[in-house]
Length: 205
Image (cartoon, rainbow, N blue to C red; front, side, top):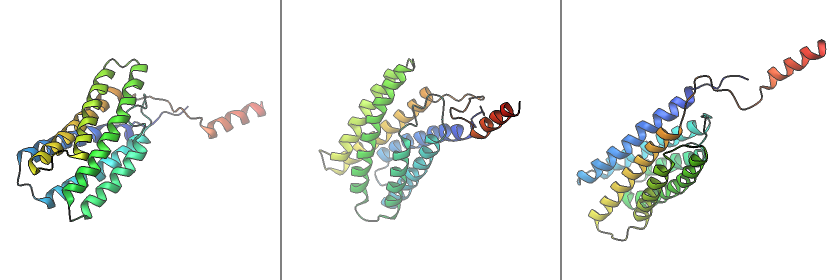
C-alpha cells in the first residue's frame, strides 16, 4: 500500500488551529469594541467563514488517522463557504442575518461534535469528555444567538461574542485532541494499479 500524504492533514489541522484562534480573537474584539463598523464585520466575518469552509473541505478529504474531527466537514465546509459569500455581499440587516445563520450553524456543529465525543471515547481518547462538555456549552451559545431572547443591541453583542468564542474553543480542542498525523500512514484503499501488476506477475510465473 502507498503512504498517505500528510500535507492535506497538516493544512487542515493548522488551518483549524489558526481559524479557531481567530474566531476567539474576533469574539473578544467584538465584545470589547462597541463601535465596530458593519462593513468590517461583514468583510471579516464573511472572509473567515469562506476560508474556514475551505479548510473543512481539505480536512474532510485528508484522511487523518482517527477520521473524527473532519468526518462531517464536507457538508459544513460547503455551507460555510456559501454563508460566507452571502455575508460578504449582503449590505442590509447584516447583524440579524449573521446572528440567525451563524447561530444555527454553530448549534448544528455542536450537535455533531457530541457524536464526535462518543466516537472519541470508543477510540480510547481520554479527553472525549472535554469535547462533550464544550459541545454542550457551544450548542447552548448557538441556540441563544439564533433566537436572541433579548433584542437589545448590547445583549446581541454578548450573544454573538460568546458564540464565536465557544465555537473557536470547541474546534480548537477537537482538532488538538483527535487529529493525529502519522508520517508513514498507509492508505486504507486498495492500489488498483499495484494489485494488477502483482496479479500479472503471478500469471507469468
